[in-house]
Length: 345
Image: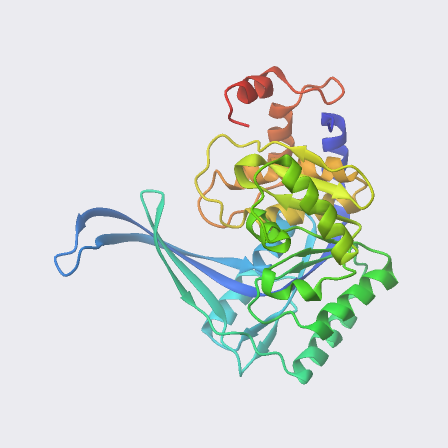
């Protein structure tokens, strides 16, 4: 178990790190309001809008998480050349290397939320087309980025078309040449692209599709972790299991399981983005895999208590871990033990 002293030391180094985030860049739009009646036109709720928000989504949310943790999230991907891509530029003003393509449309997810509940989601989505010229543009941008010091790479794959064989091979080669970790947040349609990446972080459903069976317990999860490490030749893999926590293991080593920490879940949107962001930052700041997973688990417990794709900070993580841990060698605090007995973590 991680100690509070290690939490403080690891988080204090976040600000020194530069992380390249490549993948499907999405614009998240939130429409907030209240429902007090049903429409006379159809049996649907009428939402009286109070306000709207735009947030970076997909790979953009991963970069936003990196920024929020005090590091530099360097964003690379492809959008359309439209009003939505300009909104992404407004939200991500620094370290934005997103390529605008006139033959593509920016991916947009609109969520209507009332009384802290999502009423409906509307997706504006067409597959991103990546031409040979587009791949060359990505490689050129990556070349400009690596002139500065890069400490790690995250591939945020939502299976929207941005990730190709050529791009993935290029990123794996770059990570190997720079001797830095590369972690993929995967999607099943692209599993064949991930071989020889440093690590992958599937959720429960994605891991189950790899094994072609439902993961029901720790033993199943351990089998899945070992299978993933062998099949993809990864240094380690982790499986995010929702209410059951996280299972993780390095290749050739014993798999371990950490319980979920949160006891109040409002919205799991973007939780995986937070996990992969904190995981990689912690590793490049000297954390062991178990320490990194513990911090990522704690960070996820914070963002799922918020509405929408949210971010957290090193300070929030520190205070959450302070609540969960005592100062005695990482022993679980009395408060954490009480939560475990109640089945909340």
